[in-house]
Length: 373
Image (cartoon, rainbow, N blue to C red):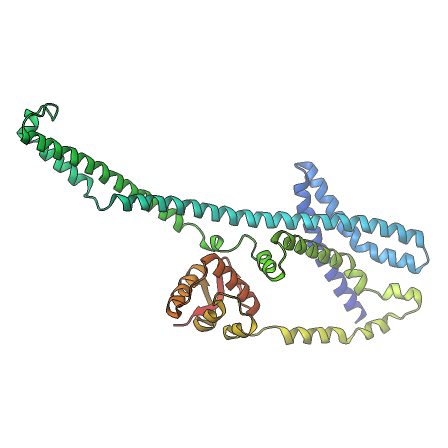
């Protein structure tokens, strides 16, 4: 049993150290360029290994009364810990920035294309219904065959009333031809813009640049930047605590021997702990997704909870896109005589709601849920 505990402790320590070491290595690639980046990456990875082993050495030195050695080890451990924290914070910031930039770029592109299409549509509506340009050109050609057109020297010497009438009609047809060609050009532009819009992932456009920070900002009242920084610090500290102290905390036997405590006694005292933890996890782990529980767990404004309870049902293996969800939501609001939320706000609030009830979000779509027929 003792050796099994040692093996588990070492495995967990290696996993957490690997996570922290990967963060340090990747962050080192951004500190400098070329061979210097590899140097910083190697430094970060080496510091992680030292950080994992140092608590054991510090504890042994302290138990043996070697205070100077323990203090020196603590200083080295603190330096490694600080570098690891900076690496984790830096990598988190880089990852968040890339995600937010990608979302912001998609939103900007979508807004620009939509604006161009709306301007073209407005101009097309202003032109009104137009005859096809080839038909207008045929009318102009037919009018020019009239003998009055030649008598008036192609409408440059208009003297008779009939000639004036003919030339006036030609001028009108010329205006119609210009308007018809402009309308056809606008139709082509609108069609091309619609094609580009259809190629944009609406999931990126509809979601917030940082949904987690946005949700926590609404809950706590703090700004998104402050929430984002707090999350970064929390995750960095958590990773470093796990990678730095897991091995020391879970393998105490040979260190406690120095003060007269038997390893078997310690292992026996901790024997029930894994069983209790396993049962606790089994109790809180959700086994099914119940959309109906939305109304009792959270009630965000805008009728999102009532809509979810009325229109959604669990359906394993199915996926519901954000676009289809909002379309159905708008139809439901119309039937309920309720003012619908804006699309982006609705998707944000439904995403928050889905996290609470256990609906997984995957690339702008929601898994294991479907619309009620």
